Image (cartoon, rainbow, N blue to C red):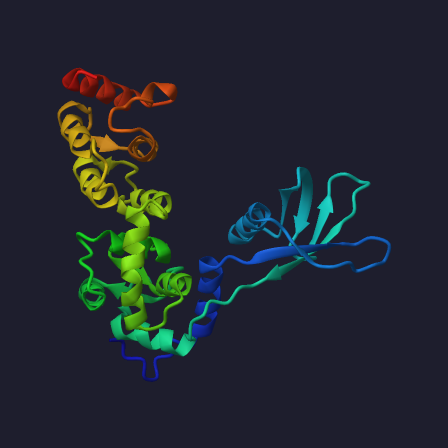
Length: 304
């Protein structure tokens, strides 16, 4: 546990929370038409437009173009206005609707402090401290989850959007707890079955699966060793009937024995959209050569 007496490490806790909350629950954006001197009423943009505007914010852009109902608008986040590229269209005022998670900041800080320790570098965008090493294992012991064998651990890391395997930086941990709306260890422990079930059932599988590839890499490498990939597939795709056959074939036949992101994502598509008899495999002409070769081999072996 961190010694916080007189150190001031947590002087920015409220600011850290607010920034992490926006990552966990991205703001929704609203607009109103500025026509004929009437202020109009505020109406919400659809989710896709809000995502585009939030992407501008994350990139630190004050201005940028977004597509609204098929029309291009120049968004100015300083003046909070969306100007249509069509000169005859009506400009729209903007405002941000910030969502607050149902968590107590003080309770969340107490939870975090129990496991946090100072981490380098001190100017890390995720915060000057985090949960790592023995404290990371202690957290998962208290959650009654084995981080090495339970997909719930990956799901929690995905909710935190943790940048490094086995580490939850301050803002990352806040983000995950805000997304799950928990601020104590009992409630966080209670979320583990839901996190696990959502991956296994497929509800959150695409997000957790895509996240896993990035966090599993050792920078600057952009390829995941096949043996490691196979371990993650066992966690993420335990019910894929062809998993062991594919892994066995890949270990014997794949050149380089490494997986890039495109192949990683196409294997998810194979596992979730193609039945075990591969009956509809040929309907998609965009499969990578590696998977074409595996399917040809598998069909010959099984007489399909």
